Length: 352
Image (cartoon, rainbow, N blue to C red; front, side, top):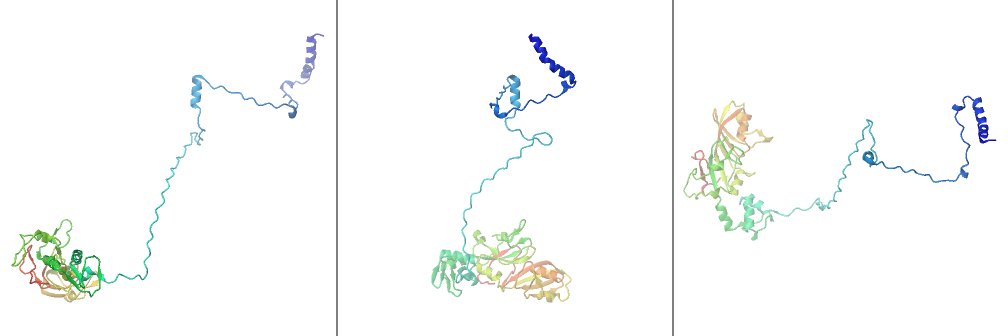
């Protein structure tokens, strides 16, 4: 039997089966019989290495290939923005421990005595500023002992004496009397206003027998003792002497101030009595005042206090308006015949 006959015989059963099953060519081939895994020798998987693309196309592919992990895409298809990294604040250096102040005892004793400068001022010896200056210079004695330390406290009834240097220094202090015109302020000036002290010049001085020679240094520490409004005229005292200032404007001052006042308007019933006593300013009752009506448009006042714009405010409370105000006396010192803008020294035989 030839080989061709054998081949034909081997293919014959397959062809016959195909002829008997017309769907054979479309039928899914049967799965091969299961193989026992234990009998099959294990082999390592072979990894096929892929060759890197070369040439221009390879360069473009490598350039387009992301080197880092691919960012997540947003819902719109674009890359989701990476949130900014928050800067971590630097740690603060630890604070240095604060010293703990000991709490004051609830009933701690106060320093004994009263400040020397305060007692000297209250006794009318000088101002506190002057007292401190004299103490620094060693010009003050307490019970025979020289005091040169500021803030020294003494007994209220201690004996106080000053040296001849202090007396000489005090004798050089000047007090001047000025007839202030309207438009000048007596105290610290505000912008646009002129202080009354600018009128204390050699040209405006009224000279008297026994007066000291006027020197520019006399203007140093020269301060008004008592207020006089910008729209008022009359006697204004300026002094370097703390004793004078305390007597005129101290809390316990009893020095009288006399005024001539020109008014307009119709006074309310019993207005004159109210001006004398019964009015209040700033919630406080005023002291008794001496008030007399000279004529229909002029009043005469004598006060022992000096609140801001006191007479003008008093007159408004009784239906009057002040048109003009002139101070003519302070204590026992009168304005006299001083003309507006003129000044003179307080004489040695004068006292308030």
